[in-house]
Length: 190
Image 1 (tube, rainbow, N blue to C red):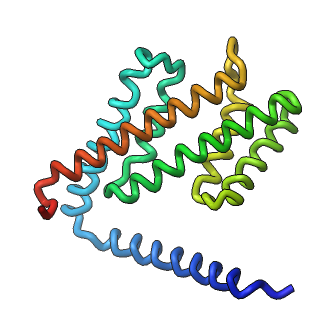
Image 2: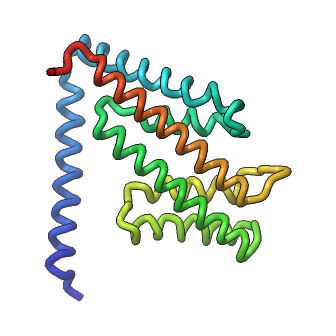
């Protein structure tokens, strides 16, 4: 069966995007060591401040596993605000999709390895169907956390709400850190 013209165009665009990412990675490798050091230090500082700012208040916020907020902030911080927003969206949407599907599967089929396989697969598929394929792996990761990470003394529903809130907190902190860093950057044009 021949793909529809729109499908051919989408495949072509995906290949073009992959090729452009490859070119960008090559250009980044050609930067002088001094520039890579400066950019790396800036990114390291933003990531570290973001992770700490996300983690430190988690106990006061009632988050049992605040390390997820720190991990999320670390994963979301990018060197520019636009990329940070996109990554933040993917993190939050992926956590929400994987969390909802993970809980739905646990409530429907129980918590065992077959349930896990169903939840992980459905989470990835749902992200694709909702047109946020970039959040698919994060949806699968959250389903994995809901179904495979032991959480004694709590239900899957509480675990899901906690996970989504921790991710949401980490995402929010990362966005604020990068936004502030861009505003305070003396190299930024007025």
